[in-house]
Image (cartoon, rainbow, N blue to C red; front, side):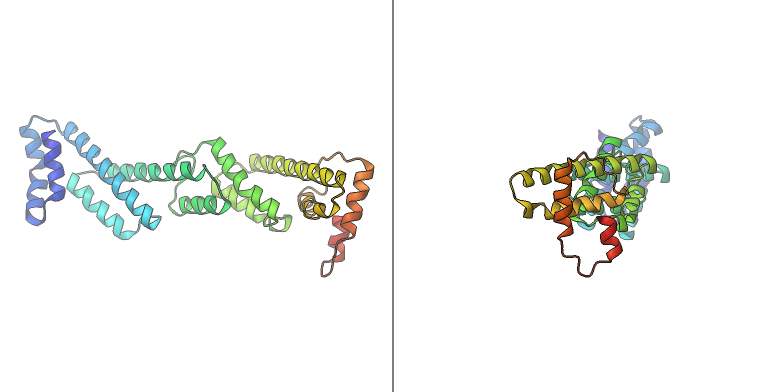
Length: 261
């Protein structure tokens, strides 16, 4: 405890006094009967607290650490007598802690914009979401779905803009084949939901309410060459087709219209 207070004192001291503290640290610990390993352990514990507080404040205000922050941490490293390896380990642990807390809060109410900003921040910092941040595979899957579902429903993600899916997959570092299977499962689920709502609206005679839902189906079908695995009775199928055929296709390539039909 006495040694710990001595080391902490070096942070509050200024100029020559601070240098005296740092120079006397090992001698003072030896007088107290502490081994070099024990002193190193205490220094590292203090460093962990300092790094956590500093990294947390800096990332909360700036998002990531800049050159000035790294210079400050290098100064702290010197004050505590930490090795480069110890300093790097503490920095990684502090960043992981901050990012883990951030994704926990984000997943309480995930938004495509928030998830995109988070994964891009991790990528910029060179942090792998699974290995460095500690995000589990089930959570990565949920992040993937939470980002693509709103885009699919709104039309922001289409077969013509499918490179977005590749970008998300690579950013989350998910296996491409597993990602493709997940995407297809999401697509079929959304198509089934849309078809269910179309059926419900047609039964109530509210044909006008099916327009956006039919457009959704067309977008989903474009990803899988029309095979959405839906079972539709013939009368409903003709009704849906006739509603679509009555759409205003001004300015749309006739070949695309025919393909959609």
